[in-house]
Length: 191
Image (cartoon, rainbow, N blue to C red):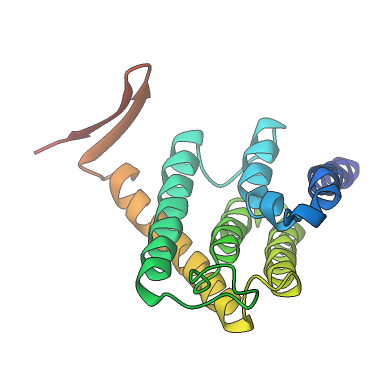
């Protein structure tokens, strides 16, 4: 439909606009991967803000997306500081696993789960951006191929665990309630 074409165009333009400044700074070590790793999360929220109906409420999207991101980032950080694998460019010993890949691949399944009922191409675009992010990390000599494969696996698994755990916390039969207010995030447990 015409509305879907506009959404695809908006998503494509957003990705291009976000990567232009990163491409200009590539000489300093900055690349499109530094921006694109977050674009699946941004796209999920941008589509919802534009009125595209997602599978989740804002509360569920925020809790499950936040848990997914936290699990992916925490697992990646723990492994980076435990394994001590040297990067191909010898800049440090935090190569395994790829954090950019784990974050990008944690966001891609969110797009798939939230917008599959609208169009599978939204999820495909999320996975394409995540794949490009991983390939760029290898191309810029920041990671070995096994670093980005592990990062992708961690990201995808983190989203599945994040959604499972988030639904246990915020589901309709849950004993837990999560609220966000000016004072922070509060959790209520019904006994």
